[in-house]
Amino acid sequence: MEVVRLDEARLPEFQALYTDFFLELRKKQGWKAAKEAYRREAEAYFRRGDAIFLALEDGSAVGFIRLSSREGCFWVEEIYVRPEFRGRGIGRALVKRAEGEVKKHDSSLYLFVLPQDKDAMAFWKRLGYDTINTIELVKDLEPTPRDEGFHTVELLGERFGIFEWKGGSFTNEERRFMELLKEFYESDGTKKEFLELVNRALEGWLE
Image 1: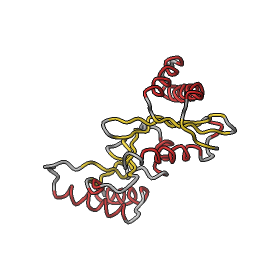
Image 2 (image 1 turned 135 degrees about the horizontal axis):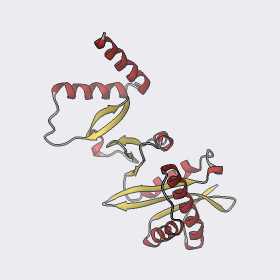
Image 3 (image 1 turned 180 degrees about the horizontal axis):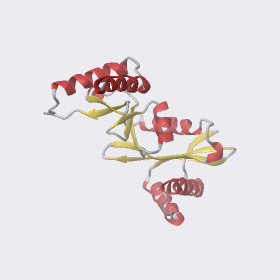
């Protein structure tokens, strides 16, 4: 398997993969799909210069990743591997190639994930991406000054980061809770352990 940057000769292969990506997504969402519109979109992204990489198996494209740049940040717009080729490390290889491209220009790579797509969330977290602002993920490819600019919060035991705001009006109890959460997660506390602790505390309070 090799990963190559998209060129004119392989544009039809990218258009087919891009269309398959949206057909699969729309099916999960229960929405109608428009094949020809997807083919036009795929070509437009190539023409405007988006960084698009193809994964090749025996010379044929079996997956892709597309990056865009918006307001000075780099984003993964789509990543897709044909179902019969999944589980072989192709997605990971595509991400690694994309990260290498972004590191030429910036230190972070962002993406959005649908909150109901648990498989995608697990995939990105295995690759070191963190959940911020509920569903917005970022992986710092190099240390950045903003690493200390987050509060630690949680939702059902899942760790989240929220940007600190100037003049934020947290109560003392809220601040202490976030401090304890940060210490808990930095000490390798797990979601399961957190929920067990909270459940026991709530059960004790309710008795």
